[in-house]
Length: 216
Ligand code: GRF
Image (tube, helix red, strand yellow):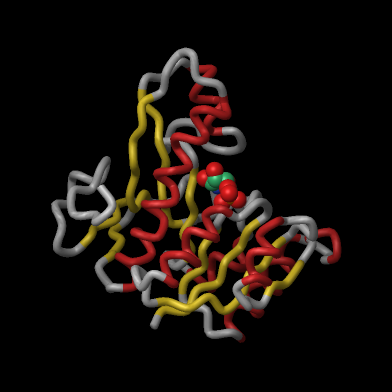
C-alpha cells in the first residue's frame, strides 16, 4: 500500500478525486496527511470528512523558504509518506523538499506543458487562441512546472471559451489522469531517464490520450 502526502492550497477537487479513487479501490493507497499553506482551503474540510490528518503550515511563520520546506519534508517523512502529491498547491517547491523526494513529487497542471506554465494556465490558453489544451501530470523539480512529464490529456479549446468553460473541461480530465498517474506509480511502472518518463508495459509514445487507461 502506497502512502501519500497531499499538499493543496484551495478547493481540493483533485484531492477529492484521489480520496474517491481510494474509496472505489482504483488506488491501493492511503493518505497520511494533507498539508496546506492556506487556513481557508476547502481541502481541509474534505480531509476532515474523510478522517485525514491536516496541517496548516504558513510560509510566513518560517524564517525562509528552506526552513519551510525542510519542515514539510520532516512532517511527510515522519508519517512514512512515499509519494507527495501536489493537488493545487500554489507555490514553487523549495529544494529542501525536492532533495528529500527526488522524482517522488507529482503535480497536476491545467495546460499541456511546456505551454502555459504558472498561474492561470487555462486563461493563458484562451487568450492565446489555441485549438487544443489539456492537463499534464509531471514530476516536480525546482522550476515552475518544468519537471518530467508523466501523462497528459488533451481537450478541445474553442474561441468562445472563457477561462471558466475551458477550466471545467480540463478539470474533468485532471480528475482522471491524476489518479491514473498515481496508480502507475503505485504499480512500480514508472521510471525516469533524464527528462523522459517511461511507463512499463505501455507504448511509450502515446500518452496524449492513453489507450490503456481504464478511463479513456
Ligand atoms: C487545478 O486546476 C490544478 O490543475 C491546478 O490547480 C487547480 C487545483 O484545483 N494545479 P483543485 O483545488 O484540485 O480543485
